[in-house]
Amino acid sequence: MFLTAIRSIIYNENRLYNPGPSKFWRRRRILRLSAHYFGRRRNCYRIALVHVQRGLLYSTIGKKQRSSDLMKLHAQRVSSGAEELGMNMAVYRRGLESAKVCLNNRSLSDLAIWEPRTFKALGNFAWNNYASQGFGNIQNLGNPPEGVVLRGLRRMKIVE
View: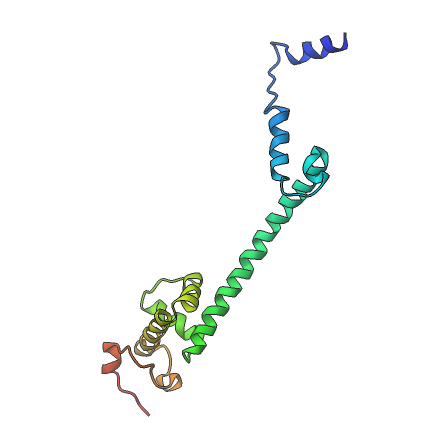
């Protein structure tokens, strides 16, 4: 009698009932996410559910920390690469921005690590462009790096 009462509630045509995904698929999803755990955490559904939910929570928190760490790392690499060329990062970035060279910190840091010649060529270009645009006092920048000379720099008179 008890089973017939439940059956009549579930299969009543007058009531809309959507059971959702079956129990098997819900459990399978959790157990697949816990497949790399050790012990009963990966075999028992109730224990796996707790640990999977905790792991998903920590992974969400970790994404923000990882992205901020990577942004700091890219900025540090670009700054160090610019200091190797004898200029600070502000001069490097401003010279590239005024020349309409659109490279973000990630691509610049990759160039600084894996393509040092390209990074140096961009640094020379940025220095010359910074000096020719008149952003700063050219005496403070020192002598220009060798290799790249802009037309505007040739016309400019250096006052010593």
